Length: 69
Image (cartoon, rainbow, N blue to C red; front, side, top):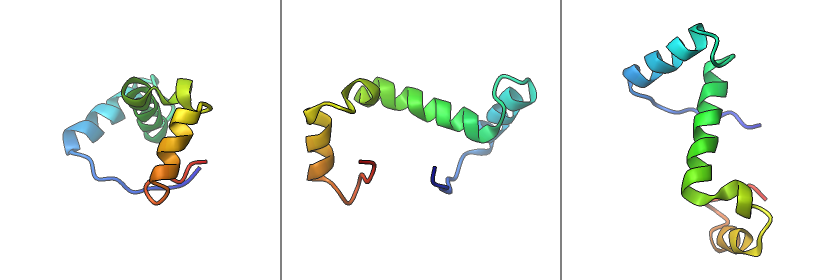
């Protein structure tokens, strides 16, 4: 895993902290990873297409923007 820095509105961070405090997620990082995974699944269908040629072609067209393969 790589570490990144993001800026969040305070209300988002507070909501994530509440979920963490309630024990729904073990950490804020895990909550954000799950939210991002769900976003990518919905928007890009990444999990289903990761091994397909279509996704690989998209990555190859923009190698400077996506470095995951």
